[in-house]
Image (cartoon, rainbow, N blue to C red; front, side, top):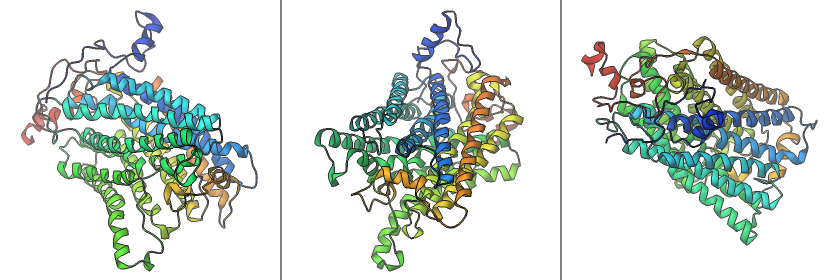
Length: 566
């Protein structure tokens, strides 16, 4: 394969510190950005939108957490709880997590491939604006009492269609990425030689190309049933049908597909830090690929569970439960564990660590724990269905993506802005975000073991009951109508504290990225992959020359001390 030419945006891409003023003035600069097909700009616009969305979703999560601390005191209007839970779940999942990961991938993957452009760049650009418009309309619909559990029928329909538009936009970016990886690699770069991050993005892209259309189909099914037929099977109203039929798109294991690239990012940063050819390369590729098996749970649209009581089942029924459970939950968790261990052994051997490696390690640990917790959630005998355990598991997935995005910006900021961020400030923020993520997620999971109810409809985790699902009642019970022995207030207080810590870390990181940094050379990390072969910041066309790749570490081959082990 050879790189494709790009005849658009041939000027130098501005850095993050640019004022936005050009020869055409501020409006001209804005027009350049909004109409750009430069993949680096598209990716950074996704990152900016995700950062703003994170602040809003985190504030809502904090308000809901404060309400849960003391169920006998009501601070928020009870009728608003359903909408607030919807904004939190929708915002963190489709306005923060997936667009943040997608933004990093769009901005970096073509550079890693030695390509001068995205394949289908206009599709990716159109996808971004579809995401922006769809996200804005969806939030507006929820505010107007639409969305899951909403009682305004027209706005329930608006939320459904807005979510369809948003997901179509994200899917456009995913298709562009997958096509880029398959068709625009530099000469000599076969699939065994692509960087780890690019490989993980391809694996995640395949999963999303399979999963997101299933999600879209169910959204359209619910819309048509509610709008034109007045009902859907089982006589579920449209507000409840959204959760019962499309709820799998907002929970595990579907959301686990979004964070597969975290393991690829970790592997790339470890290879760079150790200055070694990371081995065994094929095994790490295979381990990351195993995580894709989780997509089967989305395809069947039915949680793969071990029924209760398991000991009371016949031998045949036990086998029928265990086999699909091991496939959908066991293999992805095993793949994540192997990818983490195989990559981590290079750190142990070399004892070389950088700030991006720390971000990648902590985010990968959150991803691994999320896979394991998702499996535990789907064991009925554990009694965790309908509790806050699922919400804690979901928050760990979201914060893993946030932490990895912070690490990715720390690592690749030279290619976007021409600057490196100061490690002495960045590293403490990463540690603070990790501590906050653990507090926020673990506290809710512990509360789940104590049977604190979650605001998630039962059909989302164990769809054994569909008739009579009352989302408004679920939301109300989750914050004002529960009681259990033990430090009830403490767990919810820790959850609030955790979200606050992550929010503070993200705000400080954004401020640092906007105002700090030192001029970077073309290869400040002494990297191994092709993004470090171009200037910092990278020009719109990425490379002046087409690079010929002879191994999986093309830049390492050019360094005299490493040519002998190519």
